[in-house]
Image (cartoon, rainbow, N blue to C red; front, side, top):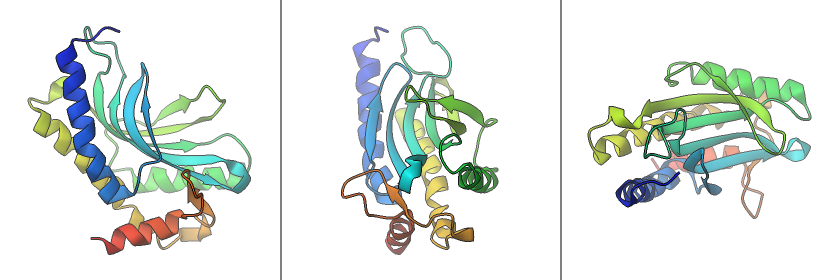
Length: 189
């Protein structure tokens, strides 16, 4: 897709603006992805042999084609992988996020898949880009979505049913647990 340069520049400004907020509220992001389908910062988590179990993403997403724009929606999502080893525990993550995000999501949960064979559920907190009249409104909406995920850290830190044992961030040195991350982020507030 060939986009006008001013749209690309606007997206870069917004992404840069949310980067610091994302890091301050959720922790250091583990990846930034740019493709035909999305442009976002993400924080992914793995557990032992299960590899990827869930992640939090904030940015731009293509949910429908729009002329002269690569992406149609902005916001935040939580992805929960449902296939792979230990399906019982994966089911518990799905149940946890489904319950905790029920008032946060803006649409029905959706299936997702990856080129590596991952299959799961996407919990969306999106709005169409053209819903907003300014960059400030877009940034505030993404920040509100990030805050919704940050609020989960209070529950994750308590480790209900011990489901977050040994869940670590997908970033070197591979030893920060989500429980430690949640406690650290809570203490900063």
